[in-house]
Length: 133
Image (cartoon, rainbow, N blue to C red; front, side):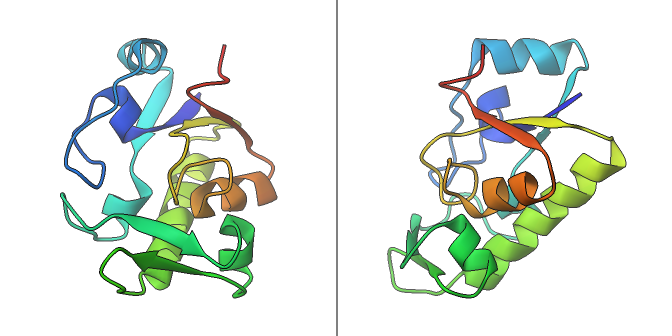
């Protein structure tokens, strides 16, 4: 069982309110081999929402309190990104998923994202849609 970024499964939930559908991910969801999640939505953020980026480090640095997540308008959403990451981890553990396919270049799900860092720290193998085979 996989955890997958909901936007890759065709769900309109990214910060612009659109999806980034990936055929392989959609097929996994259809075959009930993957559960779609969006850390930002799970944390209570709206669709659409301002673009955000990690300021001062990586997702792991955010988890360790060494970096922040800042929206384009300057709003600090660090706590929301951490909350969303932990919500995804709860779901991952509840379904006993050992692997995740997450959206590349996202402050939550990208290779240096907050959710990715938390999942990796908890022994979950993380792929992006670009390196999943």
